Image (cartoon, rainbow, N blue to C red; front, side, top):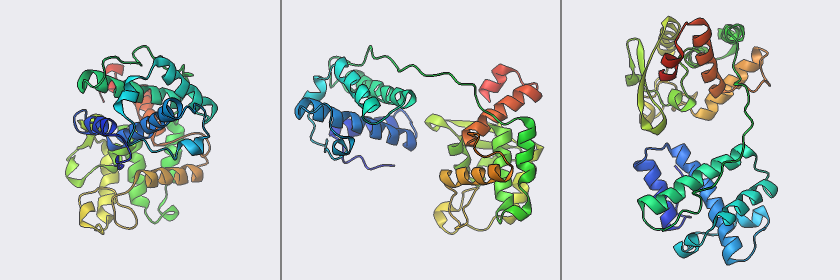
Length: 293
């Protein structure tokens, strides 16, 4: 989790509120921190320094810990649109990135007006979200999924059982990247695994025969962790620590390349789409049941 000491007290309180009361993940709250820090830097530059279009590198140097709440209370919808325009023209933010910033701003000002009662009016109440292009979800076909798994041969990796197990769980269970790296040994019970998902909500996922076989093969060769803090982690790195999300992404990239599937935009999240699509297409799973899963 990031250190929020560079923020004014009201922003720090919002971030800790989202983390502890609303149960948002540290990664999500850190994203709020980045987006709202950029917004307050822009506001300080535009309203206090009278520089609405500073160079991005100059904006990043601005300290905001002393930005008074009075300045926040004077923000208008026009100021917010000015910030979004600046992020588009000066920083090259695309519609998706600006939409994320809009979401952060809405949550922030909703907190200041309705939860903390620090502001009387909400300047972003009528703020519209940038239009996003709807794209067709990308996923691996059944043939590509089998090709990916079949290419994961013992000779191709010193961590074959671990990597094969990771890919098998992704393709069969539809779990998120954060859920996979967060699995502990105690979360596995017979043919189920407990996952800690968004908002710190638990959910139970059933393991089919392929997942159980892959888990058994991996656990048979899993080495003891290097540190006590990682003793419960299911998946370990080569150094014996809990595997990181970035390392899992690298593993997928390596296997995709070996299977001739690189450069197609596949990611751990796309494997989540793949699991859902294959369940619907070949598993005869009702769409409502699939949504619950």
